[in-house]
Image (tube, rainbow, N blue to C red; front, side, top):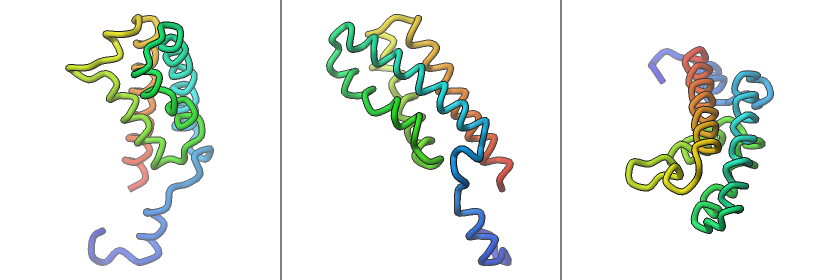
Length: 118
């Protein structure tokens, strides 16, 4: 924090509001959780153990995590689309692309909230 910013202001900025208080972020997180459920179901249907293990915690985290952890969960979901090892190589586009779109919307909603917060 910059010099001259009061202790109370620093504390107010360091605390995140409850997730449900940030409607756009909460809605985007719930949408991403539904898409993650579909992606996980597709991985289970195909018996893709590696992707099942990777994706299994994401729906609940996207649905329930507080803001700071939600951002980390979204980044973890986005990382499933790596350049060398991608969930796209294992699962069909009708489940991967909606998940990717939902994760990107969530990350943008969080970034918007963070930029307006400062």
